Length: 133
Image 1 (cartoon, rainbow, N blue to C red):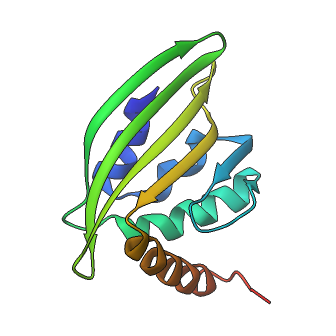
Image 2: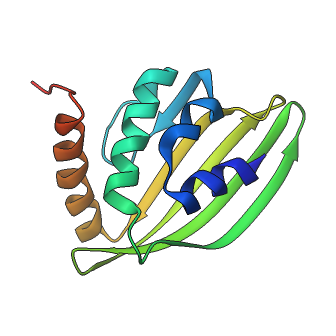
């Protein structure tokens, strides 16, 4: 199930992202204090995250799988550098039995990196057409 996710990340090709997301997918962001629901909204946030996180320093360094009734949960630890700031985080991805992502949770440290990511994500989301009031 996770292989398709790795392919999207490795290729930096977002065209396969929509096929990976279930219609009722939920995203828990480290910078947005409410859950983001639905395929279209989650795809927009993940697109902004790709543009923010995925540079030449991004890599998954550990991976753990837990098979569950009706799907699988995968925990991926990553590191990257964004404008010279070291970022360490975890993507927790839950797949349903059809191999679609139904939940995506991101945790990031250190706090300095979280502030930077918030700024860059908001700027990218505005570029993608999302309005904030």
